[in-house]
Structure formats: C-alpha cells, structure tokens
Length: 313
Length: 253
Image (cartoon, rainbow over all chains, first blue to last red; front, side):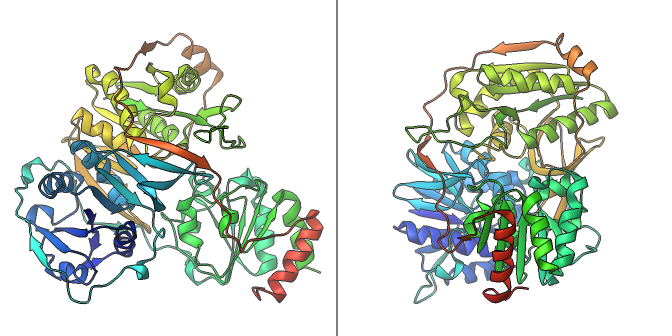
C-alpha cells in the first residue's frame, strides 16, 4: 500500500498533493491518503474525490499550525499503525522541513525530489539537474516528488467518494519544540513580473555585475523586463524582486530569454509556463535546453551583441 | 555560542560533468572541487554569529581525504578548528551515512548550534541537516534567511514558497539549514590563509556504516525535449535565424 501525505493551506489541498496522488496511482497497487491538521473535515472531503481506498484523517489541535516536530510525532505513529510499504509526499519546502526527520525516526530510507517512478525504484535529478539517476531502494521507504513531475489533472477521481476514517493518535503538544508565527510576505514587491509580455533573465553565466548592461540592452531591444535566477539576486547584482523561481516570482510571458542560466529546477518552476523559451548557454548539456523552444549553445558575450544588432536592423 | 558548521566538498560548477564507464557515478578523478555553495553561506552565518555573541566556530566535514581542501578554506575564512570524518566511501554515501558520520563526530562536542547548507550541489538529497538534528536529538528549522539570538534560544526566519516567510522560535541546542543569499560571503585573506595553517584539523574514522539503503543503479544525461530547435552556426548567423524564428514562427516579437 502507498500512503500519500496530503499538504494543505487555508483550507485547500495544494496542487503538488494532487500530483503526488497521481504518482501513487501510476505506481500501482492500493493507495491511501493521510491528511493531518485541526478542523480539516472539508479538506478530507476534497481528497475523498480521488480514486483511492480511503482517506485517513488525523484531526488534532496540536497540529493546527505546521511544525516539523508535530508532523513527525503524528506520522511516525500513523506509519507504525498502517504499515504502508511506501509513503509518498510532494517535494515542497514543508516536506523538506520534516520528511528527513520522519524517515530517520521510523528508520526508513528517504528518496527525495523524484521525477518518476521506474520499476521498483525512482528517477531523481543530481548535480542541479545536469544529470539524472535511477535509484534503487531497499524495503519499506519514503519518497518525495518534484513539483510538476506528474500532472494534477492525471489524478484519477473515484466513481463515488472514498471512505474517510479518523485515526486517533496521541500527540503530546509539549514535545513540539518549534513555535511558529503566522506566515507573511515581505513589503509589496515593487516589480510585478507576472504581467510582463517579454522577459530577459540572466544567470551565473553573466559572470559579473559589470556585464549586466548587455542583458539590459537586449531587454531594451526586445521590449522586455530584466529578471534573474537566484544566484544573481543573492549576490546583490539585481534586487530580490527581479528573481524568478520557487523562492521568487512565477511568470508566464509570451517570450522568455534565458541568458547563462543552467536551468536548476528551482528556476524552471518559475518560468516553464512561458509560451516561447529561448536559451543561450555555453554548455550544450545545460538542462535549460530541455525545456527551451529555441537554443543557442554559445558564448552569450558573442551571441547577445549579435542579437541586439539584428533586432536594431 | 559554540557553533558547528557542517560543510561538504563538491565538484566545481564549471567542471564539465562526465559519467564513468559503469554509469554509476561521475568521472571525478580529474575534476576540480570546491566548497558546496549553500554551506559557504552557513559558514558565513556562523562567523557573523560568533562576531556578535562570542564563542567558537567548529567546522565538520565527512568526506574522503581530498575534503581537506574545503576544511582549510573554512579555517582560512575564520573558523577556529575542524573535525574531518575521513573515509573514501563518504564521497558517494547516502544522506543517512553522512549524517551518521557527522553525528558521531559532534556527539561529544556539546555545541549550542549546528548550521549547514540546505542541500548539496552534487547528490542534492536535502536531508543531511535534518537527519543530523534527529540523530543529535535537537530541534531544527530549514531554509533559513535570518537568525536572531533570543533569551530563550533562537528566532529564525524560514523561507516558504512563492515569496512567503515565517518566524519560528526554537530552544537551543538546535540545528538550522541555511538558504543561499542569507548574507554576503567573505573570502579568505592572506592573513587568514596563513593563520589556518596553524589551526587544528582533527581526523576521525567513522564507525562502520550500515549498507546504503539507496543506490544509484544508473546515472546519465537527461534526454532533451524533442521540440528544442538548436540554432547552430556563428553567433551572427544563429542570432539572425533566432530573430527570424521569433518573428515569423513564434510571433513572440
């Protein structure tokens, strides 16, 4: 049996959870869903629409706000009681925060960031997505699935709602060491890139802040906004509100030009919805070329000036 | 505060990856290596906390003999001393084995705080820090963008997805995994490099590791999406072709 641990916020199941249910259904065999929180009947009802054996509900005031300790305490008991052969979770920031501790607590291996189930094992990226590995894992285990690796709309719905069952666990709130405050957003972002028609984004390949001008010039020639991958903003070369990716903005412009961006998944999730993607990178094996519509494997310091000249003709 | 920073040596980003003949790992005999970037931010944060609150920064790395390179680098940037858990098998070990090796070295050190990067640039498990917290019996928080010392322990700013954050309080001792960009990195000075030569690197051998529970059966370059049209030729030719396609085919300009 595969147990999928659902993730939800503000009363709604997130899309990554539906993708993970789809992964479990594709893997074959019986699937159950566990949902944990406080006052979550409505969420359990949403989940019961999926074609699964049952939805197990752990409703406890100690689980009202997410904490790593709270979920590890609860899920370790649930895994002990239900004995699923595999436990699947979406590879979200929340899962990354508690799943390794959970796997260690129940003494099971954890395979993270999987993009596919392959036989009895999994496929996962390594070296920032430049390589992929087939991974074999022994015995009962836990696996997490990268956002977008399965399609949420591929999740099969049941002909009738799946049965829901409340699991009574004892969760000692005094054992929860993290005391969280309410999530917040930083002061309003000055730049809303989600509305941009065209975006020119720079990555590590730009090498130095002094080279940003050629990217700016290209953006001007294309009528595009300038943006960047995380390392550029970390270095302070462009402000944080120009960052595209899982920790920055998500965009879907008509045209996205990636200059010197290798294409780590954290960046790709922020821009793969663009209608037309152009990648210019000196490394012909860069993962950005996997999702580009047009690619030029070459030195951006030669290609970009040629592009600007061509556009200004 | 006594702070331990766990660091990993990884192949440099610039090195052109090549896969070995058995397709089980990269051909890293002729690779160049560097400090895992997220770990560099963890080290910097530890140095800043020490400058503010006093104490000691202890660097700990679990890896083969060549990992001495990044340990020296950390000492040159300002760490006080180091522990090197040395074994060839640690170069490709799974997260559980690495965390066990680090836990063995840190158990007797009675540190107040353990910092590490949120994941490594090579295998990218994103697990070692959190598993280490579990093995050391410490509370943890991950993907941290700010660390404040309070009377009761720590208050840390956790990064959530899509531009959201959250403050979390936790008691010490604790473990944090640090997000890249939390601070601006310092580089080693000549004085630091000279001073590092006199600093202690304690070498220890890890306890016999359990057989790895997950193994790479095959490692390879991902298949390219078939739709990608690569535009060959000299820069001027490729640029001309690209502009033409963007105007006429994609209608994106």
